[in-house]
Image 1 (cartoon, rainbow, N blue to C red):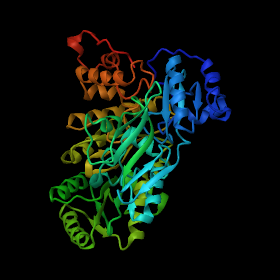
Image 2 (image 1 turned 90 degrees about the vertical axis):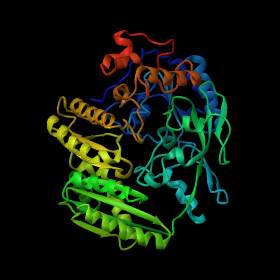
Image 3 (image 1 turned 90 degrees about the horizontal axis):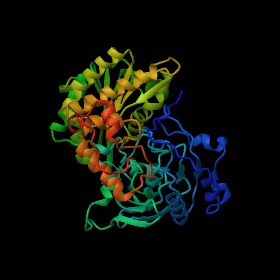
Length: 494
């Protein structure tokens, strides 16, 4: 059964529903069990909770009114985009309002001269590139869920994608945000100029997981479509050899547009699903895409091919045309849903490690898989060390979900031990709160709570997410808090 990881004491105020109906159209406030059901979780379905109400505003003024009302009534608010997140960041609260930005789906402006697009947060990631294509431009970050995920959610989680190695995460591809504070004030951060004075609040807001303010408009960078893009697919007899090959490509001074890895369980599942022509007997495959000017790509394709063969690849294929290149990527981007063909359930992890540690970590993940008696399919952004181990389990078997979570937690702890971090693009949400206790000490977490308190002094925006309380860390046993004595700062407990 789905569980609710809520430390907060509940304080339901059902009168908020009628209050919302006084400031929004009746159809924009949902409150019956049937209406609330679709909003009870995001992509992390292991945790579910129906909210007190769902608000569906259509204008910035309505968002301001909803937030001011909730602030005045001390009702918590969780902002939600498309609900494709994988860390429980949009998990509702039983005593809270879920603020859906689904109706904010307008492409406001495409500026080809300045290579920017101004969009509302409910616009799909892929829709930006589709709108910019007639101008020879596109939006670079491309999460696997780009056909469905929204730009507001991308900003909230600082999403990446298969091309983030060369072109960066969301934070590197946006220039300005328009946001609303918890008490309804509208403000902007960033600038369409190359730089803006003051503290870098744009970076602070990106990846803040809805804890500081609600995004109502995003200005993104657009890039020229490359003259040519070509992909290679290399098969390896071991995942460790494939991991070592990644480091060798980067060490050679080559920065591919994308460099992805899949192990055998993921290869077989994806091949059965999309028939991409993957070598199903390979222990691992690497997909390496190079883009740029025609002559540059020709040279780099040959260099990478030689490097892959020298690193131990048993076979290297070069996409003959753009159609075959897209087939290579279709299998990779469909890998997560494809794994559903080989397991009733899976738990998708998200950690990042230094590239040089790939062989060590992959070997250790295999050991942990054997130790817990649960299969792990590995699909990840190998070029920047962003791992996505998929822990396969069956929720119908008592205890398997809990075992899968423990295994996932051990994998994230391993990432920290080798110099990495507990997330690369999915965010912390409710999923990785315990592992945040492993990565950060009490002083660091105290500063994070201080930033939260500066924007949201009463802790009403997405409480219980992203940053654990020191109490939780002490109970988790992963932190030596003030020499064993629980002494906490005078800050709100979110």
